[in-house]
Length: 419
Image 1 (cartoon, helix red, strand yellow):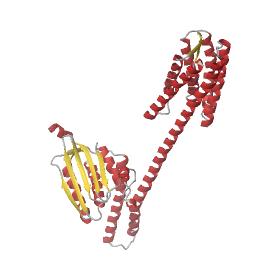
Image 2 (image 1 turned 60 degrees about the horizontal axis):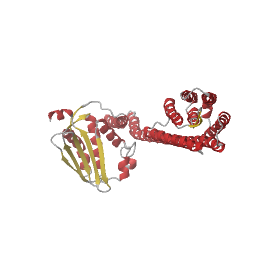
Image 3 (image 1 turned 180 degrees about the vertical axis):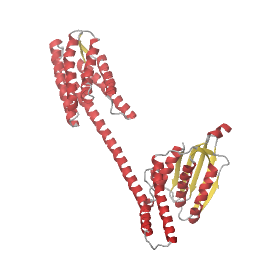
Image 4 (image 1 turned 30 degrees about the vertical axis):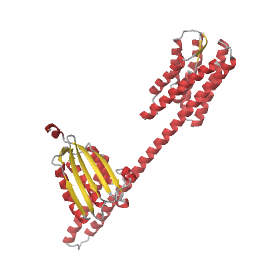
């Protein structure tokens, strides 16, 4: 069973190469190879086959070079190129009867595979596997016939078994693995596409809901303004309400734009202590209304690079959420820590806290811990602004104990030079 051993060894090498290709494709997320990339891998397989050929006579080399040619011809449409490569490689071993037999087999095969390629991909996966095995079996029979005519082997059972069983088996294994991997890739891409569409639907629904509310109120007051006998004082009051509602709708759109395109309009030096004090002054009435005591401890030094307006927007959202997380009152701690390379801003509350699942989903498109009262736009904006300013966010929380937000930013470069 010498021929069978050689061909099984040859097949095992091809399977190992296929495994390496699939692992590489998975790591690089490029399973759909270009024709050039496919040609390189299949060329390497053909070379391996030649290196481990079995010679029944000085002029004839028997191996599994047929498998890469069939796989490449049917699945990548490069059968003619691979057939030409096989003929060229065979010429290096001498121009003799075996070389001409090689031409008679692979030149027509390359043309046939090139013609069959468009039809092949119109078939369902099961038919593609079946057709690949059938065409391999036919070519294996032709190979055995050529071998019987030109150089009859001493052990016919060994030769017939090796060539009628191993090449079809090898093609079946490779095509099945290929179709299986392709099906998994298609399923993964469909899942990602579905998730993206779902996110877009949620985003559209949330934006339309948030914009519709102020617009509905504005339309109602505009209708009231059309009354001829409306007192001037009421008219001014209604106009102020319409203006406030339209500004609310504009803020929703601005939040969305900040999330989708988190660019900084203006790059400047931001004094962290000074700007956080301004944010706290804005939110003090809200904190007093919720019986929340604010405890602030800021380091003397600390400047970062970014957009002052977006910095305000970011921490207004975070601190406001922390205050709202303490509906029965509580303590809010805001601290900054300065080092030679970074500034840490820590915001801690004693509110309702979050579960680990809620923390993981924090900042996802339109996910809110406030239920129907929130849209998730605020935290989306926070994460986008922090990323745009080269910072990062860490969140720690325990249910009924509170939440800690830690923001880390690189210090402003001028301070590095001063040190």
